[in-house]
Image (cartoon, rainbow, N blue to C red; front, side):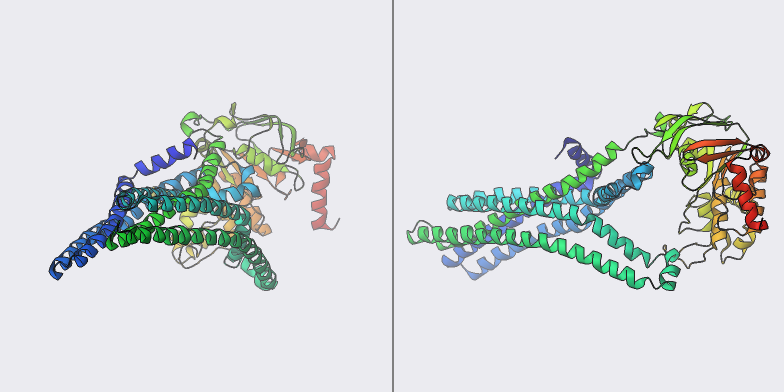
Length: 590
């Protein structure tokens, strides 16, 4: 294991005292219980063979059982109570770390299939893997303690059994290492298939897909895809399971041959020679089996470490490699007098190498200006917005707000500067109030502001019709009755989320795509009223509204091909004028 992995496990372990005590108590208890069981057999047989009284034998056996019970009680308290609680706390801390990391993962990496596979098998399961690895280490230590204690006892009878047991353990270790490699390869092979299967299964449970699935009778196709995908998983697993089965057959055969076969033959030979008694033979054989089992346990959990540790290391490497943005304390916060001036200077960007999306783009937007970004789909408009929000960074050139590079602002600072309504804003399975305010429990002052925001986007009537008003849940995934909004109302809710914090810059990316013409016109007028003192950027295909903005930036093939007011661009007779007249013609028939 890498040093940083060991350090991470040590930090996780030492952060929970119960986990530390469990790492000490459980191995000691396991070793003592095994040693007692071996010694008990020899002493009990000696008492019988030496014809001691039945009362003495019963007293001895009861004493040993009571001692074993006390050890078992301690073991149960740690194994089923204290350690699981500690593991849950460790899992919680790891999941918090992962959630913070995933929320800051570069936007470009989220859409990469290979990255998603790595995240699926390593980072997402970081908490579970950490607890499992600590459990394996604990069991590994317990197996070593059992080995030492029983070997001391069995070695006093016949050291040959120890040699045979350790030879068996060595072979088991080799087989278990091979088995771990097979498991690791299988996990890598089926990660994508499992993720794909989970996606297909979720489709049947997601309301936004239910209508299409039922109306278009796509269940058959999806079920066939699910079946094909699971068949692929089963086929891959079957191939690896056959290899594992062979490895385990070899492991079991050598155990029976060496320990139970050769070991028993050696002991019976020494018994016939009168070197050891029958009680010693019985105890030694039983002890040899315990040694073999303990050695097998050590090798098995060592192989589990070899199997799990690489995925934990992969997760930690991912987190280290993608700490692109330092902590907020190391980045600049927003000044109290943020003006809202935006500047792009010779900005270039590409999602895929050698396929530029933005090419040497330069423009500036003054404080309070209302700007419309227009252009064909794929021209680069949304990429400009993503860069403005700090979700991606320029490959070339500079993007600034109030003279500072956007990359210099902390994420929290950008959230205080820019309010955004994006094309794919999600509706969370929370209450309507939580969806707008994005806080778990808005207080009374926030409630008053919330109602003002809802009025500004014409949602008050729709909210009043909901069963619990603004406290109505908007999804069923949290176990609450569903009271959903229409598509247009959901769009208004996302706009409300964008304007609720009163930031100096407001960005709206196609905010009215699901609205009828009357509602669209009303929303645009409301937004202009709400943002009268703000710097505003609209991305829109509805050119009827661009007549009222200060300037229009036409994006074409990754460059700003035209810039000016509606009247200026119409007088030039360029591409904007052509687009506007085309839309006008669709309505007038000209």
